[in-house]
Length: 510
Ligand SMILES: [Zn+2]
Ligand SMILES: [Zn+2]
Image: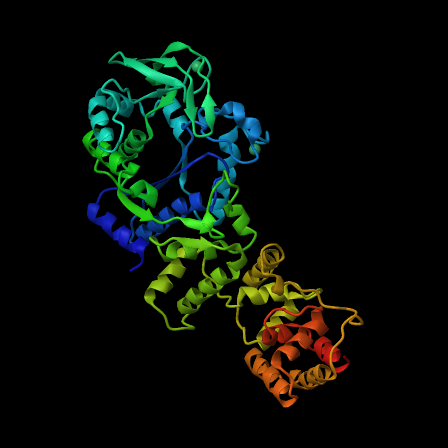
């Protein structure tokens, strides 16, 4: 059974209305790792729907949090350290604020992946006073909250701790305002003091004021806030990254707060492993980031979804030079789905869950598309004809067009060197040995025989042997005469993908 179907089954055992919550902290460009949370949550929504259960699917921007670190390249925002993320201006001035600047494109990219959650803003929810009842409960039960939080803390919180971080009404910062007294009703006294966040020192303004929780200018500490949100939205399922679920991770604290303070049965966690990008941790501050939008320029959304849906608890690497391999893996699932290949039911289901619209067969390798896309003046009709020669018949032409464009973008920007080529117009600078020329001449004859790429590949070895030529020398001759390089796309496929008359002419007359 696929993990999403298993999760859906577990949720049905729990019963009641199903609510899946996902969320993203807005500390810079939301990347593919952030998207993984939402895209995985959507698989569970889909699995429930396939069982006939309509669920609520939420995405919450964690924008009431303080701005703790300046993302790479946004140094001009350095004065906003310590402010609620919601109150930071758009660094480029094109949206209402910082949060919109990053979350609106993220949400519209998610829609390209067929993922359309109900979009909420934590800061707006606070400021609309939606959480009033829960905040009151948290304040009244603060001793219980302290007790629970302290179970997981090395440095215990003092008994006087008040679980409310106000926004200072004088300077507008949230990191600096420290609650000092609660009047038992709606008011919390605070003082605005110097503090430090991960991105540096933040100056407090010294103001002593009162925070009215009805105005919602402030927030609960994260572990209490998460629990509060679950209770408020009656969340039954929460996908979460492994670090929240490790020993002492926030999930365990929030789970207890949810149950013991808010009286709501905590959601079922769906724990997943992170991706790495090109072998390293995805990190906005280090600039090792790829967004959904970047992905959409390189490959179909379904390919990334299938990659995310394949396994939940194994760290996988997205290597941009190997996007072709991810496509090959996806094509395998597709072959199983369309019954072209034997395979596990699970792979079929994986393919089905990854679809954005009605599935359409393609089965033309991504690398082949990368090769075809580099041949100048090639009409889609001619490409289709050549692909039929290559035994890739019966495919969806729209998908082919799309993949050609994506594969071209990939190969030009991220693909391995040997896959990039330009057909030589003038070969006067290329010298070949007589035996190499002879080899090409014989190959020209073989090209007229309508061989398959594999047969042609074997033929190249045969020709080399009959001439007493080392096979690599003949491969060198093939690539040098056509593209002036020693390496190129796999020869059998490459020769057949090219215009036959052109290759025959070139090989005969070299
Ligand atoms: Zn903007
Ligand atoms: Zn202040």
